[in-house]
Length: 379
Image 1 (spheres, rainbow, N blue to C red):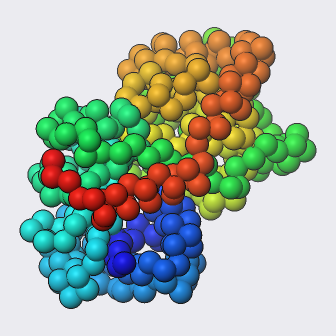
Image 2: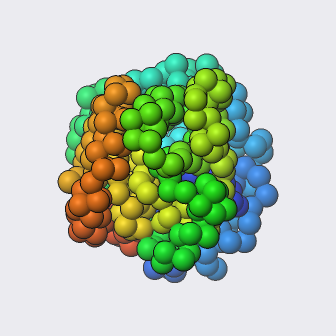
């Protein structure tokens, strides 16, 4: 059996949500199925850490696909040529980007379709590319997976897909997330927030992450609580970061708002485990991996009540309307004033997190792949 995999998202020290899904699921799948031949397609020089076994053959294709114009060349020419040459049993795309017009079976993982609901939150050409091509990719695919029941229903409703064509495969929790002792937490706080407690947001600084409203809510929280809590924002820069800078500059508490940028994995794990609470204010997500990472670290969760987030966090979060700054600040204040509430959320998180693991992710994804190869259906 030959499976060609789009591994373009595997970049050393730059794994995002899709990157981690790709890394963790493929690592397990390739090692558990040594008789299957996997061909990994990269668009730049790759690291050996992503070659998980002897049954993997890496290929670097041109051009580096980092812009929608280059996507067209990369997928519709370079990848298509590889598929025609190798004649695989399946082309697997963990980021959902497929090849139009190929006669070979294709399996896409479409994590969410935020670009459809909030097209202006993306740069112009990315928004146009995703909205034009993803409905076509979804119909081209022999089968699809997505990361939440919410995203599945979203695909069904907006792309006119048969629900039988889509399997739900949840994300898992990376191994390094764990509870830290108080001494370790103190060290982390001393490094990043002058030894003070902090609300944490993890994610890129894209518009849909809603950081301007979080900053405004933090201002209200500080005025009403009189606390010395700080706000720590962790994640890579993105289009729209200028608005975030303006919001911080306008804040009376701008010295207590820290932008840490993108951090290495160990630092991120320690920062999560040392937080007073995770303030996850995105107004749209396909899954929201930081939610389950916070559960693993026994950190209380404040969370938006939109898209997939109630499905993922369940009863282990205190919810707010992400478009209502006063509601966000009210929930920050509620958690601040109630130690019992924090303990209750942590206890519920310890139960909720049992639903998520990368082993389960890999197992469900592989079963779906096998069925696609062995028993293809027409939807």
